[in-house]
Length: 363
Ligand code: UD1
Image (cartoon, rainbow, N blue to C red; front, side, top):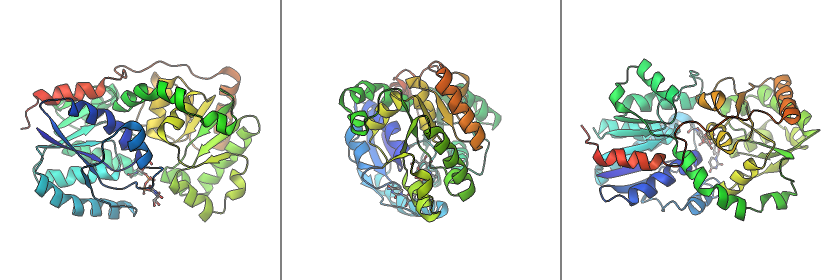
Protein backbone atom coordinates (compact mmCIF):
# COMPACT_ATOMS: atom_id res chain seq x y z
CA UNK A 1 0.00 0.00 0.00
CA UNK A 2 1.47 3.34 -1.05
CA UNK A 3 0.66 5.99 1.57
CA UNK A 4 1.21 9.67 0.91
CA UNK A 5 1.89 11.32 4.30
CA UNK A 6 1.30 15.07 4.60
CA UNK A 7 3.03 17.68 6.75
CA UNK A 8 2.81 21.46 6.51
CA UNK A 9 3.46 23.24 9.78
CA UNK A 10 5.51 22.83 12.94
CA UNK A 11 3.01 20.83 15.04
CA UNK A 12 2.80 18.22 12.25
CA UNK A 13 6.47 17.30 12.44
CA UNK A 14 6.40 15.64 15.88
CA UNK A 15 3.31 13.69 14.78
CA UNK A 16 4.64 12.38 11.48
CA UNK A 17 8.09 11.35 12.81
CA UNK A 18 6.99 8.14 14.59
CA UNK A 19 4.49 7.31 11.83
CA UNK A 20 7.15 7.49 9.12
CA UNK A 21 9.50 5.39 11.25
CA UNK A 22 6.89 2.66 11.83
CA UNK A 23 5.82 2.69 8.16
CA UNK A 24 9.40 2.35 6.95
CA UNK A 25 9.77 -0.75 9.14
CA UNK A 26 6.65 -2.33 7.61
CA UNK A 27 6.96 -4.74 4.68
CA UNK A 28 3.43 -3.92 3.58
CA UNK A 29 3.57 -0.12 3.38
CA UNK A 30 5.49 2.22 1.08
CA UNK A 31 5.47 5.65 2.72
CA UNK A 32 5.98 8.86 0.74
CA UNK A 33 6.40 12.18 2.58
CA UNK A 34 5.01 15.45 1.22
CA UNK A 35 5.63 18.90 2.78
CA UNK A 36 3.26 21.69 1.76
CA UNK A 37 5.71 24.36 2.99
CA UNK A 38 3.27 26.27 5.22
CA UNK A 39 6.16 26.66 7.69
CA UNK A 40 9.55 27.20 6.09
CA UNK A 41 11.91 29.15 8.42
CA UNK A 42 14.81 27.01 9.55
CA UNK A 43 13.80 27.38 13.21
CA UNK A 44 10.16 26.45 12.46
CA UNK A 45 11.07 23.64 10.08
CA UNK A 46 14.56 22.27 9.28
CA UNK A 47 15.68 21.93 12.89
CA UNK A 48 12.71 19.61 13.59
CA UNK A 49 13.52 17.34 10.67
CA UNK A 50 17.12 17.10 11.88
CA UNK A 51 16.40 16.51 15.57
CA UNK A 52 13.50 14.11 15.06
CA UNK A 53 15.24 12.13 12.30
CA UNK A 54 12.39 12.71 9.83
CA UNK A 55 13.45 11.79 6.29
CA UNK A 56 13.69 14.72 3.86
CA UNK A 57 10.32 15.14 2.13
CA UNK A 58 10.03 13.29 -1.18
CA UNK A 59 7.85 16.13 -2.46
CA UNK A 60 7.77 19.81 -1.48
CA UNK A 61 5.01 22.17 -2.57
CA UNK A 62 6.60 25.40 -1.26
CA UNK A 63 3.26 27.03 -0.51
CA UNK A 64 4.55 29.57 2.06
CA UNK A 65 2.69 32.32 3.90
CA UNK A 66 -0.66 33.88 3.16
CA UNK A 67 -4.18 34.21 4.51
CA UNK A 68 -6.18 31.14 5.47
CA UNK A 69 -8.12 30.86 2.20
CA UNK A 70 -5.11 31.70 0.06
CA UNK A 71 -2.93 29.07 1.78
CA UNK A 72 -5.61 26.40 1.36
CA UNK A 73 -6.28 27.34 -2.26
CA UNK A 74 -2.59 27.34 -3.10
CA UNK A 75 -2.12 23.93 -1.48
CA UNK A 76 -5.09 22.49 -3.39
CA UNK A 77 -3.76 23.90 -6.65
CA UNK A 78 -0.26 22.52 -6.16
CA UNK A 79 -1.26 19.20 -4.59
CA UNK A 80 -3.71 18.10 -7.26
CA UNK A 81 -1.11 17.32 -9.97
CA UNK A 82 0.99 15.46 -7.38
CA UNK A 83 -1.93 13.12 -6.69
CA UNK A 84 -2.21 12.55 -10.42
CA UNK A 85 1.48 11.71 -10.75
CA UNK A 86 1.98 9.71 -7.54
CA UNK A 87 -1.35 7.93 -7.56
CA UNK A 88 -1.19 6.88 -3.87
CA UNK A 89 -3.57 4.26 -2.42
CA UNK A 90 -4.20 6.48 0.59
CA UNK A 91 -3.46 10.02 1.83
CA UNK A 92 -2.65 10.33 5.55
CA UNK A 93 -3.03 13.70 7.28
CA UNK A 94 -2.32 14.71 10.89
CA UNK A 95 -3.66 17.42 13.17
CA UNK A 96 -5.66 20.48 12.13
CA UNK A 97 -3.52 22.91 10.15
CA UNK A 98 -4.31 24.27 6.68
CA UNK A 99 -2.26 21.51 5.02
CA UNK A 100 -4.46 18.91 6.75
CA UNK A 101 -7.74 20.15 5.34
CA UNK A 102 -6.43 21.19 1.91
CA UNK A 103 -4.84 17.82 1.17
CA UNK A 104 -7.91 15.96 2.49
CA UNK A 105 -10.10 17.92 0.08
CA UNK A 106 -7.86 17.37 -2.95
CA UNK A 107 -7.58 13.63 -2.23
CA UNK A 108 -11.34 13.29 -1.74
CA UNK A 109 -12.06 14.89 -5.13
CA UNK A 110 -9.77 12.27 -6.65
CA UNK A 111 -11.57 9.48 -4.72
CA UNK A 112 -8.40 8.64 -2.81
CA UNK A 113 -9.22 7.57 0.77
CA UNK A 114 -8.12 9.95 3.54
CA UNK A 115 -6.85 8.81 6.93
CA UNK A 116 -6.86 11.35 9.76
CA UNK A 117 -4.52 11.03 12.73
CA UNK A 118 -5.73 13.04 15.77
CA UNK A 119 -9.35 13.01 14.63
CA UNK A 120 -12.45 14.03 16.55
CA UNK A 121 -11.04 16.80 18.76
CA UNK A 122 -13.52 19.67 19.11
CA UNK A 123 -13.28 23.03 20.85
CA UNK A 124 -16.85 23.83 19.69
CA UNK A 125 -15.48 27.25 18.76
CA UNK A 126 -15.80 27.88 15.06
CA UNK A 127 -13.95 31.18 15.28
CA UNK A 128 -10.76 29.05 15.38
CA UNK A 129 -9.55 28.16 11.89
CA UNK A 130 -8.32 24.83 13.28
CA UNK A 131 -11.84 23.85 14.39
CA UNK A 132 -13.12 24.20 10.83
CA UNK A 133 -10.10 22.29 9.53
CA UNK A 134 -10.80 19.47 12.02
CA UNK A 135 -14.51 19.22 11.18
CA UNK A 136 -14.04 19.18 7.41
CA UNK A 137 -11.13 16.74 7.53
CA UNK A 138 -13.05 14.31 9.76
CA UNK A 139 -16.07 14.49 7.49
CA UNK A 140 -13.89 13.41 4.56
CA UNK A 141 -11.90 10.68 6.30
CA UNK A 142 -12.29 6.92 5.91
CA UNK A 143 -10.27 6.04 9.02
CA UNK A 144 -10.24 8.31 12.06
CA UNK A 145 -7.46 7.62 14.57
CA UNK A 146 -8.27 9.24 17.91
CA UNK A 147 -6.08 10.25 20.87
CA UNK A 148 -8.70 10.42 23.61
CA UNK A 149 -12.20 9.08 24.22
CA UNK A 150 -13.90 12.51 24.00
CA UNK A 151 -13.11 12.37 20.28
CA UNK A 152 -15.16 9.21 19.84
CA UNK A 153 -18.22 10.85 21.41
CA UNK A 154 -17.76 13.95 19.21
CA UNK A 155 -17.52 11.88 16.05
CA UNK A 156 -20.49 9.67 16.91
CA UNK A 157 -22.53 12.83 17.61
CA UNK A 158 -21.66 14.06 14.14
CA UNK A 159 -22.84 10.79 12.61
CA UNK A 160 -19.48 9.18 11.87
CA UNK A 161 -19.93 5.39 11.79
CA UNK A 162 -18.34 3.69 14.80
CA UNK A 163 -16.30 1.30 12.65
CA UNK A 164 -14.31 4.17 11.13
CA UNK A 165 -13.01 5.26 14.58
CA UNK A 166 -9.85 3.74 16.05
CA UNK A 167 -8.52 4.70 19.50
CA UNK A 168 -4.74 4.36 19.18
CA UNK A 169 -3.26 6.92 21.59
CA UNK A 170 -1.17 9.95 20.81
CA UNK A 171 1.68 10.03 18.27
CA UNK A 172 2.94 13.34 19.65
CA UNK A 173 3.53 11.54 22.93
CA UNK A 174 5.45 8.80 21.07
CA UNK A 175 7.90 11.50 20.03
CA UNK A 176 8.03 13.10 23.46
CA UNK A 177 8.77 9.84 25.26
CA UNK A 178 11.39 8.87 22.70
CA UNK A 179 13.32 12.15 22.98
CA UNK A 180 12.73 13.25 26.55
CA UNK A 181 15.84 11.61 28.00
CA UNK A 182 18.01 12.74 25.11
CA UNK A 183 16.75 16.30 25.63
CA UNK A 184 17.74 16.17 29.30
CA UNK A 185 21.22 14.87 28.38
CA UNK A 186 22.03 17.17 25.49
CA UNK A 187 20.15 20.45 25.90
CA UNK A 188 22.23 23.33 27.30
CA UNK A 189 19.35 25.82 27.29
CA UNK A 190 19.10 26.20 31.08
CA UNK A 191 22.84 26.89 31.41
CA UNK A 192 22.70 29.34 28.54
CA UNK A 193 19.84 31.29 30.11
CA UNK A 194 21.16 30.74 33.66
CA UNK A 195 17.85 29.34 34.80
CA UNK A 196 17.75 27.07 37.84
CA UNK A 197 15.38 24.09 37.56
CA UNK A 198 11.81 24.72 38.74
CA UNK A 199 12.35 28.44 39.14
CA UNK A 200 10.88 29.86 35.98
CA UNK A 201 7.81 29.68 33.75
CA UNK A 202 7.68 29.01 30.00
CA UNK A 203 5.27 30.87 27.74
CA UNK A 204 4.11 30.31 24.15
CA UNK A 205 1.34 32.25 22.42
CA UNK A 206 0.33 32.40 18.79
CA UNK A 207 -3.44 31.90 18.33
CA UNK A 208 -4.94 34.65 16.17
CA UNK A 209 -7.65 35.21 18.83
CA UNK A 210 -4.93 36.03 21.41
CA UNK A 211 -2.31 37.90 19.43
CA UNK A 212 -4.15 39.53 16.52
CA UNK A 213 -6.39 41.59 18.86
CA UNK A 214 -4.36 44.37 20.51
CA UNK A 215 -6.56 44.60 23.59
CA UNK A 216 -6.52 40.87 24.30
CA UNK A 217 -2.79 40.59 23.64
CA UNK A 218 -1.99 43.61 25.86
CA UNK A 219 -4.11 42.15 28.67
CA UNK A 220 -2.22 38.85 28.54
CA UNK A 221 1.11 40.71 28.56
CA UNK A 222 -0.06 42.73 31.57
CA UNK A 223 -0.69 39.49 33.45
CA UNK A 224 2.71 38.14 32.44
CA UNK A 225 4.44 41.27 33.68
CA UNK A 226 2.77 40.87 37.04
CA UNK A 227 3.79 37.20 37.30
CA UNK A 228 7.33 38.08 36.15
CA UNK A 229 7.70 40.20 39.31
CA UNK A 230 8.09 36.94 41.28
CA UNK A 231 9.04 34.28 38.71
CA UNK A 232 11.13 34.57 35.55
CA UNK A 233 9.17 33.99 32.35
CA UNK A 234 10.80 32.60 29.23
CA UNK A 235 8.73 33.48 26.15
CA UNK A 236 9.47 31.51 22.96
CA UNK A 237 8.01 33.90 20.40
CA UNK A 238 6.22 32.53 17.32
CA UNK A 239 6.68 34.54 14.07
CA UNK A 240 3.01 35.62 14.05
CA UNK A 241 3.38 36.94 17.63
CA UNK A 242 6.70 38.67 16.90
CA UNK A 243 4.97 40.48 14.04
CA UNK A 244 2.12 41.66 16.27
CA UNK A 245 4.46 42.93 19.01
CA UNK A 246 6.04 45.20 16.40
CA UNK A 247 2.77 46.16 14.69
CA UNK A 248 1.05 47.09 17.99
CA UNK A 249 4.19 48.74 19.46
CA UNK A 250 4.21 46.42 22.50
CA UNK A 251 7.99 46.25 22.91
CA UNK A 252 7.83 47.92 26.37
CA UNK A 253 5.30 45.34 27.57
CA UNK A 254 7.62 42.41 26.91
CA UNK A 255 10.72 43.95 28.50
CA UNK A 256 10.40 42.02 31.76
CA UNK A 257 10.19 38.68 29.89
CA UNK A 258 13.08 36.61 28.53
CA UNK A 259 12.33 36.59 24.80
CA UNK A 260 13.55 33.72 22.65
CA UNK A 261 13.18 32.72 19.02
CA UNK A 262 11.06 29.60 18.36
CA UNK A 263 13.07 26.84 20.00
CA UNK A 264 14.33 23.54 18.59
CA UNK A 265 12.38 20.52 19.82
CA UNK A 266 14.92 19.17 22.32
CA UNK A 267 15.51 22.56 23.97
CA UNK A 268 11.76 23.19 24.18
CA UNK A 269 11.12 19.79 25.79
CA UNK A 270 13.89 20.35 28.31
CA UNK A 271 12.74 23.88 29.09
CA UNK A 272 9.18 22.69 29.69
CA UNK A 273 10.16 19.65 31.73
CA UNK A 274 12.14 21.76 34.22
CA UNK A 275 9.66 24.65 34.47
CA UNK A 276 7.50 25.56 37.48
CA UNK A 277 4.65 25.99 35.04
CA UNK A 278 3.88 26.51 31.37
CA UNK A 279 1.48 29.15 30.04
CA UNK A 280 0.30 28.52 26.48
CA UNK A 281 -2.41 28.61 23.86
CA UNK A 282 -0.92 25.71 21.90
CA UNK A 283 -2.81 22.45 21.50
CA UNK A 284 0.23 20.16 21.59
CA UNK A 285 1.80 21.79 24.63
CA UNK A 286 -1.33 21.07 26.71
CA UNK A 287 -0.69 17.41 25.96
CA UNK A 288 3.08 17.46 26.41
CA UNK A 289 2.90 19.17 29.83
CA UNK A 290 0.39 16.54 30.99
CA UNK A 291 2.89 13.80 30.12
CA UNK A 292 5.81 15.72 31.64
CA UNK A 293 3.76 16.30 34.83
CA UNK A 294 4.25 20.09 34.67
CA UNK A 295 1.27 22.36 35.50
CA UNK A 296 -0.08 24.11 32.41
CA UNK A 297 -2.28 27.23 32.27
CA UNK A 298 -4.06 27.38 28.93
CA UNK A 299 -4.77 30.96 27.89
CA UNK A 300 -7.98 30.16 26.04
CA UNK A 301 -11.68 29.94 26.85
CA UNK A 302 -11.93 26.34 25.64
CA UNK A 303 -9.88 23.30 24.71
CA UNK A 304 -10.39 20.51 22.21
CA UNK A 305 -8.30 18.28 24.48
CA UNK A 306 -10.46 17.84 27.62
CA UNK A 307 -8.51 14.80 28.81
CA UNK A 308 -5.60 17.13 29.68
CA UNK A 309 -7.91 18.89 32.14
CA UNK A 310 -9.74 15.84 33.46
CA UNK A 311 -6.63 13.68 33.88
CA UNK A 312 -3.58 15.78 33.07
CA UNK A 313 -2.03 18.94 34.51
CA UNK A 314 -3.94 21.46 32.41
CA UNK A 315 -6.18 24.33 33.65
CA UNK A 316 -8.15 26.66 31.38
CA UNK A 317 -7.67 30.28 32.46
CA UNK A 318 -9.05 32.31 29.55
CA UNK A 319 -7.59 35.72 28.79
CA UNK A 320 -8.62 37.77 31.82
CA UNK A 321 -5.39 39.16 33.38
CA UNK A 322 -6.75 38.76 36.94
CA UNK A 323 -7.54 35.07 36.49
CA UNK A 324 -4.21 34.33 34.79
CA UNK A 325 -2.31 35.98 37.67
CA UNK A 326 -4.46 34.29 40.35
CA UNK A 327 -3.97 30.81 38.87
CA UNK A 328 -0.24 31.35 38.37
CA UNK A 329 0.14 32.43 42.00
CA UNK A 330 -1.76 29.37 43.09
CA UNK A 331 0.76 27.16 41.28
CA UNK A 332 3.70 29.08 42.76
CA UNK A 333 2.27 28.54 46.26
CA UNK A 334 0.99 24.97 46.01
CA UNK A 335 2.98 23.37 43.17
CA UNK A 336 -0.18 23.07 41.08
CA UNK A 337 -2.10 20.21 39.60
CA UNK A 338 -0.41 16.80 39.55
CA UNK A 339 -2.47 14.72 37.14
CA UNK A 340 -1.73 11.42 35.43
CA UNK A 341 -0.91 10.26 31.94
CA UNK A 342 -4.04 9.62 29.82
CA UNK A 343 -4.90 6.15 28.52
CA UNK A 344 -2.72 4.83 25.67
CA UNK A 345 -0.35 7.81 25.78
CA UNK A 346 2.41 5.26 26.11
CA UNK A 347 4.76 5.80 23.17
CA UNK A 348 3.19 3.12 20.95
CA UNK A 349 0.50 4.97 19.01
CA UNK A 350 2.34 4.95 15.65
CA UNK A 351 2.92 1.21 16.01
CA UNK A 352 -0.84 0.70 16.53
CA UNK A 353 -1.65 2.86 13.52
CA UNK A 354 0.66 0.87 11.26
CA UNK A 355 -0.59 -2.52 12.57
CA UNK A 356 -4.12 -1.39 11.79
CA UNK A 357 -3.28 -0.13 8.30
CA UNK A 358 -1.39 -3.32 7.41
CA UNK A 359 -4.61 -5.29 7.57
CA UNK A 360 -6.99 -2.55 6.40
CA UNK A 361 -8.65 -2.74 3.00
CA UNK A 362 -9.54 0.65 1.47
CA UNK A 363 -13.17 0.47 0.33
C1 UD1 B 1 -0.21 27.40 12.21
C2 UD1 B 1 -1.46 26.55 12.39
C3 UD1 B 1 -1.72 26.32 13.86
C4 UD1 B 1 -0.50 25.79 14.56
C5 UD1 B 1 0.66 26.72 14.31
C6 UD1 B 1 1.92 26.26 15.00
C7 UD1 B 1 -3.26 26.78 10.72
C8 UD1 B 1 -4.60 27.34 10.48
N1 UD1 B 1 -2.65 27.19 11.85
O1 UD1 B 1 -0.50 28.69 12.68
O2 UD1 B 1 -2.78 25.39 13.99
O3 UD1 B 1 -0.75 25.70 15.95
O4 UD1 B 1 0.86 26.81 12.90
O5 UD1 B 1 3.02 27.02 14.69
O6 UD1 B 1 -2.78 26.00 9.93
N2 UD1 B 1 5.76 32.50 9.50
C9 UD1 B 1 7.11 32.73 9.45
N3 UD1 B 1 7.93 31.66 9.33
C10 UD1 B 1 7.47 30.38 9.25
C11 UD1 B 1 6.09 30.18 9.30
C12 UD1 B 1 5.24 31.24 9.43
O7 UD1 B 1 7.56 33.86 9.52
O8 UD1 B 1 8.28 29.46 9.13
C13 UD1 B 1 4.83 33.63 9.62
C14 UD1 B 1 3.91 33.77 8.43
O9 UD1 B 1 4.44 34.61 7.50
C15 UD1 B 1 2.63 34.30 9.03
C16 UD1 B 1 2.69 33.85 10.46
O10 UD1 B 1 3.99 33.40 10.72
O11 UD1 B 1 2.62 35.71 9.00
C17 UD1 B 1 1.67 32.78 10.75
O12 UD1 B 1 1.89 31.61 9.96
P1 UD1 B 1 0.63 30.73 9.48
O13 UD1 B 1 1.11 29.61 8.67
O14 UD1 B 1 -0.37 31.64 8.90
O15 UD1 B 1 -0.06 30.16 10.77
P2 UD1 B 1 0.41 29.93 12.28
O16 UD1 B 1 -0.03 31.09 13.09
O17 UD1 B 1 1.86 29.55 12.33
